[in-house]
Amino acid sequence: MKRIADLDPTTLNAEQRGVYEAIASGPRAGVRGPLAVWLHRPGLADRAQQLGAYCRYGSSLPPRLSELAILMMGRHWDAEYEWAAHKPIALQAGISPAVVEAIRTGMAPPFTNDDEALVHAFVTALHARHAIDDALYARAVQSLGEGGVVDLVGIAGYYTLISMTIKVFDLAPPDGAVAELLPLPS
Image 1 (cartoon, helix red, strand yellow):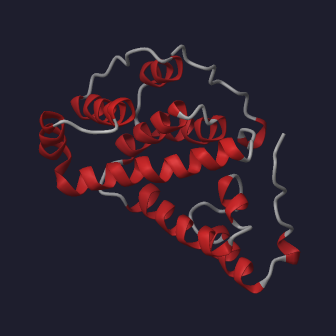
Image 2 (cartoon, one colour):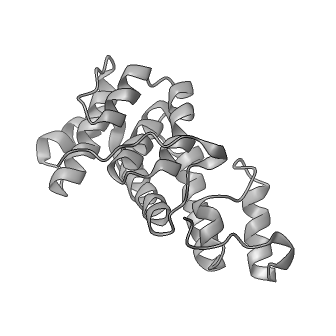
């Protein structure tokens, strides 16, 4: 059960109202999920939503690769809200249904694109070892460019914040979406 109530838009203070309007009038077209939680602290909400807007809409990575990383973050954190929100976006961006299903079930994805396999290896290593070895780093820079590697790390970090917010405040999947993420074996 959700641990924190959404704020009533009609009772927001001036700072909250400004952040609310900035989010609602942008490409997200609404204030929900983690953004609604952050609105309790408008300074955090404002800065986090700006970072999120960059990570989601302004990154140098093509949406196919950023959405792959986002799905991996949602899976890593068992963040149903994030998974439900981004699975259709990832599919629309060109991630194959077989890859999405493999990530969901914790299996090795059947990649046909080298850049997707690279992003998967990078994010997997970051989670498993909390580091990226020199060889993987060099491959990532070769494929994505230095700026792309910076953006990939930024996306992973931002969607960790999103996922932590989802988990701590027990946010249900959006719009009545069905939970799909079973805990993976250790």
